[in-house]
Image (tube, rainbow, N blue to C red; front, side, top):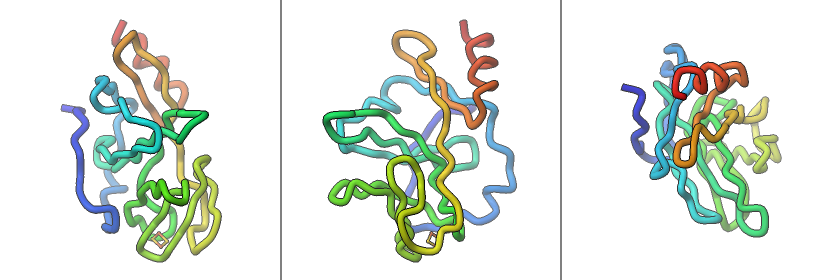
Length: 139
Ligand code: FES
């Protein structure tokens, strides 16, 4: 029931989806997070969209953010040409730590915690304590 699915366009308003509580954690199969350096995708975290991206070389780190802009909840996207996260609604720009670089967003993008569940799966959560809960329930 918590499966991740790809969702739509980057410049979209998600509004009151934020009113529904997200799950404590989400277990991702490899196909959901196997990204090449510089690639990104948007999947669901319960009612919320998440942005997964793998940073370009040499770091090649998987980063996962809530994809709702902190200004007015538009969906943000990774812009590889500039190596930033962009909200097209009002040109809000974030770095790959989620910090605001420019534009109207008043706060950073929340970054999800992540941990390998086993050799194949990844568990993600907004709070560190829920990663522990996921490990208890899935091992
Ligand atoms: Fe993202 Fe305004 S909603 S900059």
